[in-house]
Amino acid sequence: MLGRRPLRARLALVTSVAVAVVALGVLAAAYVVIRYELGRQLDLQLKQQATLISQQSRGEPTGPLYGECTWLAAPACAQTVRADPAAPHQDGLVLPVTGATRRVAAGTLGEHYSDITVGGHAMRMLTTPLKDHRALQVAVRSDTVDKGVRQAGLLLGAVGGAGVLLAAGLGYFASRTSLRPVTRLTATAEHIAATRDPAHRIELAPYEARRDDEITSLATSFNTMLGELEEAVAAQRRLVADASHELRTPLTALRTNAELLARAERLTPAQRERAAGALGRQLREVTGLVNDLIELARDEEPQQFLEDVRLDRLAERCVADARGHWPGTVFTADLAGPEGVTVPGVPARLARLLSNLLDNAAKFSPPGGVVEVRLARTGGGALDLTVRDHGPGISAEDLPYVFDRFYRSRQARALPGSGLGLAMARQIARAHGAELSAEQAPTGGALFRIRFPETLG
Picture 1: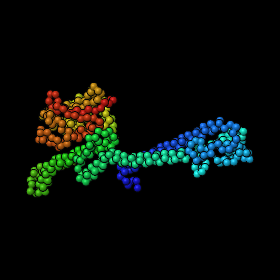
Picture 2 (picture 1 turned 120 degrees about the vertical axis):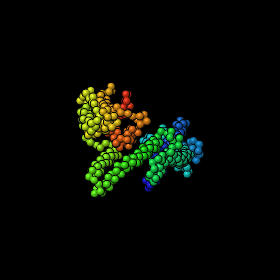
Picture 3 (picture 1 turned 45 degrees about the horizontal axis):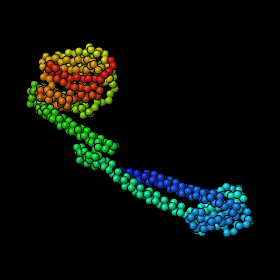
């Protein structure tokens, strides 16, 4: 049944039960202490009276000394008793005499306290030995002490009950106040699930936002998560929109060429050959674009076995491949500096990273232009692999967006490509713990820098 209640009700109930247990324990201990202290004071009073009476009654015969047992004055009643029941002056005793009383008088039993009832009144009696085989009995009414103990118990019970009720009210108020952000979180989550709109946030009052507790941290973290989710959804929508835009042109061309080839009997051999060649190129372009989209859509590198990769040899091989792909561009490589230095990584992915940078540099280089590749160690022990071209460079307005998916500057719109190469290059770099950056070269052209963290060669 407890699990079906709201969280704030459960917290209030648990708090109330905990406070009740503690309060009842404290009140029970206080009751026991009060009862013990009042009884001890009564026994001490009887002891003092017995000492005073024993000093004043030396040589007096046995029998009653004070007989008004119903009085509240102390001592209410007192008497001396001999060990021998047949001894004279044993008549008219006002307090009960037992075998234990005779043994005290005979000296075989020490003094002791007992609770008795005389005339319908509860009394406390002390029996203590005297000389000449006598025992002194002193009693006083104890109903006043019992009444005081009962009143203290009732008062403590009332205080405890009020404390439990107050704790329950305060616990419910505190749980309701503290869990208010959780209620808003639940409502926000349900609203997002219903509308699929992550733009909503948990609104915190200024006094709630200033509190440094777990609930406020949960609400803040949830808002942060919603912000990240909103950005992810927006990025996904942009990716779909950009991909649709980029695929529209080649797909249209593919359909056109496919329709031409479908009427191949109306075309000359040269026209069929041109249409087939164009169709093959467009298929390769679309296939490459789709593959790039698949890799970028994962937003992370696939888990593969890492190995130590020599950057100088990897760069040398990529530069050699680029020379074959771009015969009109001159590629130079300065890789002799940190020779033999290795970094942990996947060779194929690092080669794809560098190839994308080399293709981008060659694409923006003028005919016969030079693309420079350089590997060097920085002062902090990190490795810098740079690719520089001598083309138009990157304008200040384009620099913040060069690694965005499908982003193409004004100069690049007339050139082949989908705008995914640099985005993929940064993704691969980050997966290897490196950072890829772009900047304007001091004497013109664009410079891309891959900085690997400090490593041992």
